[in-house]
Image 1 (cartoon, rainbow, N blue to C red):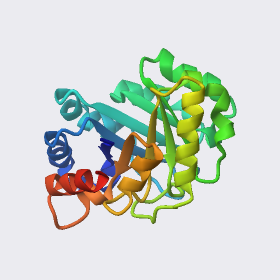
Image 2: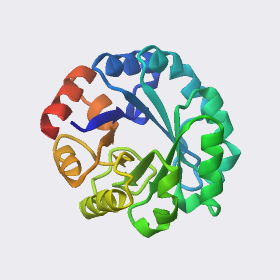
Image 3: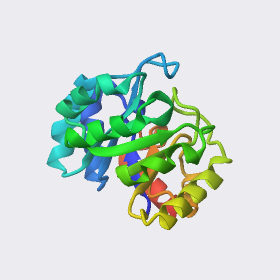
Image 4: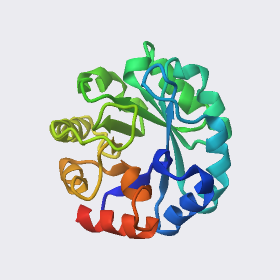
Length: 222
């Protein structure tokens, strides 16, 4: 079954610890932090202090804390996020002119390595670093805001990525998707080959409880 990685971007920050705990109590094994700088993407979200604040909850559950850096010059801040407790750091191809070096930096600091592609960025841009990553994140919306509509053309991209990884004997690398994933779209991304679905509003932002929302997503995923 596809893993669900709740994105705290959509959580109620006045009770962030409780909402993270509620998700972890449902057996969630990943919590996703969307880090935005107002330059690479048109929004500002959170920094290392938020990551640090939820790390005790995630660590107690034996889960993975992901930091998705949607920021320019991510190499300047990777160390801060690892120090704050990030178990996996994901950087964008589009922000890393020396991508291999940046991925090595994450590994050397002791975190798992992720790389991200925007919807219009071709898979060929990461072909030379497939041996250096633990996770590839395919953006299924243009990054910057939660609650956007899923871009259906990205399904083919996910499927092609799965084939690419298999051909390169990297089938163990996770394919994560982020953007517009909810009960009506999660089955499609799972069928295309995604192994992890980041979802924020479908977990935290409606009248149902976190547990009910996660249960509905799992049921919809099949």
